[in-house]
Image (tube, rainbow, N blue to C red; front, side, top):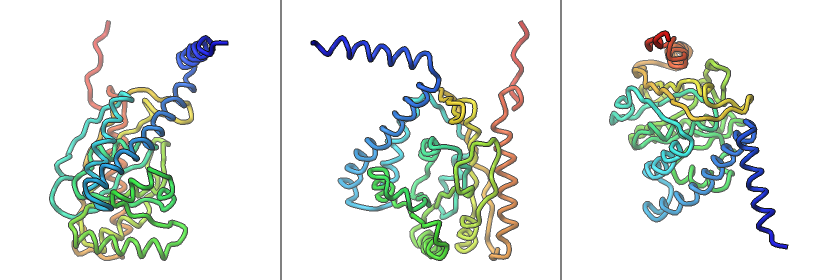
Length: 274
């Protein structure tokens, strides 16, 4: 018996399911996203090795070029304000809010030159994705061993100044889509004070209007991104870290709530009455 009728019927059934089921569309898009991450990681790794021969922060420009194409497939747009602050030629610690697996697209959309990330060690063992992160110069820390993590952060601080690097950290420490910011962990701010470099906050608006893993929502949408004024750390000591965290958290939370409001609540004109 010819297999084509069965394959055609299965494909039509799948298409019908995608049209009727929101959950099916959600999982289909997530599967596509994960498949893209793995396949693009393999391709980007080959390009990075051919271009630079191994691990270097310069590979990040190649990686970001590939990842920035994802937004066209998923119908996402980014509106960025204050990008020039990120591109200033100086070492700094960049902190941003962390919402979902889609954050990688937001990160790569505004990633400045000579910028590396701090990531949990488990990501190093995620196959091609871990390989491309390693080639891009990402620093991996073992969050279960504080002494090891502190040693890595100390090395990062020295490297920042020596090689004029920017370091991107998610201070919440985990993904959070509850409509607010979680309390910040101290690592990013200890690093900034230790190196005496500014903290540059980057705020992404809530994804909840187009992405929600609990309700299986994944549609197109626009993400508002705002780079806030840098917070200087010159002259600060470890005793000032709690106040520095509080200042940064307040500024980012205010911006997050403002950017995440619906358009009519965020200063946009009301639609004309019919």
